[in-house]
Length: 344
Image 1 (cartoon, rainbow, N blue to C red):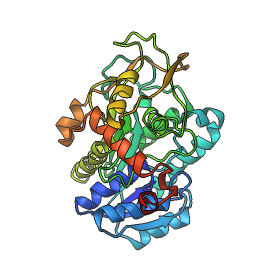
Image 2: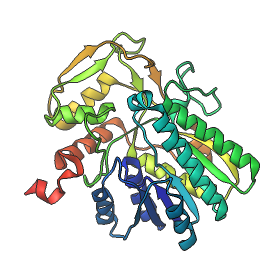
Image 3: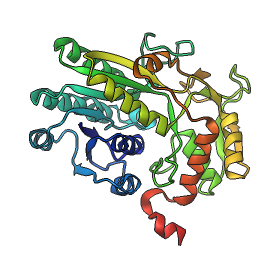
Image 4: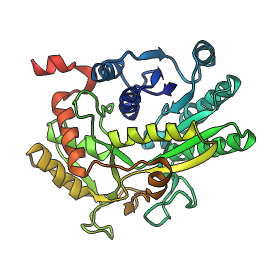
């Protein structure tokens, strides 16, 4: 199959490109490189030994999007493209609704025009809000606490309405928990712009000396060590989940949501301890006040993905930490410096 991957140069996108190519699919990546780098896709080519067709454009560039569908026999779309910083979404909500929501509407309109109605959407566990009990199942009430999460929720609802209006649509809503880790080659990994928003890249940058210490937000939660518990999933497991979802939607019709996580929670301090073992260093940290909106525990019930997609996460926390450390040490400045320059 030929798969259009929007936002395919990003962290999860590049790892999914690798697994799609390894599974024998042809891919075409659409990315505006606003939060990613072309070097990442060059490294995907290095890992797989395969050519990657890339179109640099914004998702709302309708003319370019139409030309892609007109000139190519696209079988399905995996839709990663979108802004994802929670803090920025609070400061600039209209930017997030315009980019994430309006961009998805444009994509779906063009897909519909060219009779391409197989879609895997990159959603998020943020759609479960603050008040549900763990483990989260796909049938829980949905809500959002910030514009980023709300944009994901709105898109899910748009896609449900679209699928209800035309039975030819087949959509998988993949609700990620906490993607971490890197490809075992050390060639691709998470390369956040500026100070990382997520825990694992923050820990790794402390370990490599780019940041002085980790702030742990709250140690008085009702958890086993007082720190927040999250469901961390290796990005390669997550990428393989997209391949399984793709196989599902091309044979079935309708729309379904799937949790992609491990089904197990790991606390902040447990993650720090595992990373210390991986890097052989002590990670300095200090306890800070809880952040508004943070919940004590968040982890998935993955029964549905295991049953319907034949998918299950296989990597553990130690694997996630070791692969992250390999990526960080080989690429201390991310994709800004090439691997060859680093290892000289």
